[in-house]
Image (tube, rainbow, N blue to C red; front, side):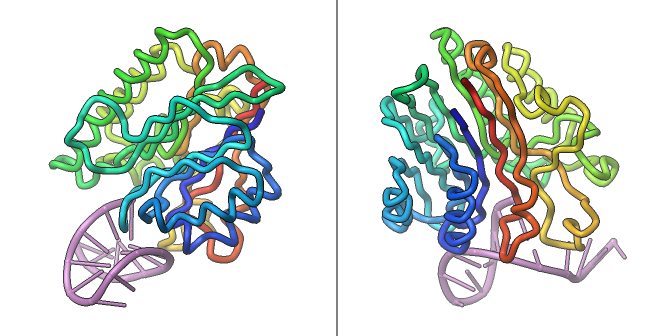
Length: 260
DNA sequence: ATGGTAGTGCGACTA
């Protein structure tokens, strides 16, 4: 069972690219970030025609997340629990039950960027990360297989950046950001990409500017965190790097994990 | 030190 995450940077600007990727990657479940549209503008039919159930938590212009599943979904949650006043569409979750495998709960997240730091945007990022930790703790109490995946906007370690010095002082790499991410991982979650590729550079984002892609000046900020019960079922994980070299690409590439 | 690119939607913000 393949679960993937892809920050698409506008679903409608990227639709042909994304459909192409779905047809080659064939994820059982995919969460998308930065769809940048309201629910009604999401091209649901294109995905339904390809056999996916579509759940959307949209927002005009900014943010917006979606969860697409080939298998039946239940317990759909839209919005990260813990702050009713948070109006940004950055979280979607569902319990996915394939007929040929055990259920998996999938949470798709678009963690705030947080720049400039310090400032109100950085405060929002850290608060959001605290809420995510609380939510992960809640999910862990159920002792079930789950995957929390998406654009975390966190560079966990120096080896996750081509040029770590360039990121000093950035909200994606500040010690406090990395500590907050470690707090979540240290609840007992497994970083699926590092499980499959302990040392290799597995960048998932290259800026559109300054020829970042051509210089391979990338960072690893899209992650898949597995609960212990999901980690028991781990088979493989990877990055679809070639997507970044295509025509009109997103600045992110898909990341995926295969579970039994 | 600044500006470089892309998306939304048509100015300015976000990334």
